[in-house]
Image 1: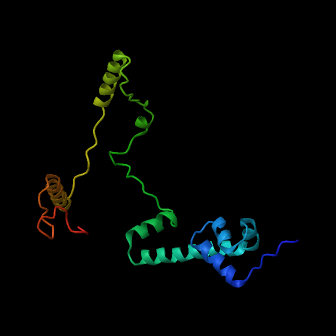
Image 2 (image 1 turned 60 degrees about the vertical axis):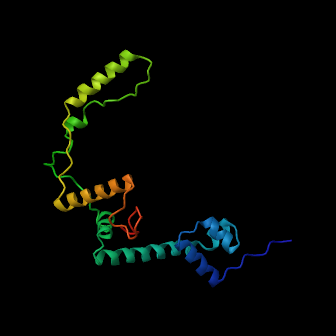
Length: 181
């Protein structure tokens, strides 16, 4: 007895287009509509491709609208991916490695395995000698607003660790800040 032919209708095409657009894997779409994955790809190729393209176009529209509205992460993402902008370091920045440093030999720091104390001591001396000549980078200074915020955060964390009442807590005896703070 011959197999019954798989019937395709407009409602099924729309469903496949929607499912492909929201990112459902093709194997799962095939299970949902009741056919083999090979049949799905053969009979619904255009719908699979169109669903993904329509979803991408919709997301691009949302991203563009968010960027136009002033959403900074959306603007940065758009410029990096669509306008091919890249972050570059200024040539006079002292934190940039020079070519001489990038061609310097690699220093490997091995853990003390306790097997050869002489080797361990030699490695430790070499490491101290190597890093003694390296300048340490200092983090950039914080502005007054960030300094005040950091100090307040440290005070809150200290109070919480000590188990004291949090100054921003809503009720007496509550040690954690209210939700959202």
